[in-house]
Length: 188
Ligand code: IMP
Ligand code: MG
Image (cartoon, rainbow, N blue to C red):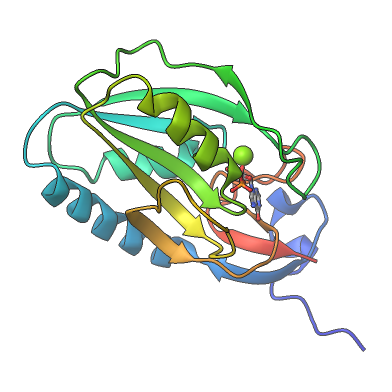
């Protein structure tokens, strides 16, 4: 016997007919935590130029909410690193597909990531960005699976410790689907 789904396929037309096994973080929990992160980040950067650098595509929803909770001047840019393709397991190679055009030298860089899984993406990016002489580099991740081995830089700002399941929603995808769910869930 299988347990009933938390959210049936028919209950949310965004779900492509899939059942949600578990809603890990709902809209209200995410919104409350993003406000706290915004306050933490505001306090952490009393001065200097702050560049919020979103890792596409997964961070786009989180970043949009987060920057509106940061009460100080900032700039936004993005970079694209591709590692997963359509699978659910990291391929291990991280490719920079789009490189930010903004000058990083002398700036505080806040790298915004949807989720830290193996940590390979961040390890690679920290190395690449570090060569451009920023004043500081910190990581803000919405979710952290806490399974990564040696991280070149641990995330300073983390929304939630995540269950070791494949999660979708609030920017996170499976084969490009489900990014627009307002909650984070694991599918059946
Ligand atoms: P890492 O390099 O293994 O840490 O993987 C980081 C990237 O893999 C994230 O930015 C996500 O795009 C993707 N990823 C890792 N875990 C998940 C997941 O549970 N759901 C969706 N995407 C994930
Ligand atoms: Mg991704």
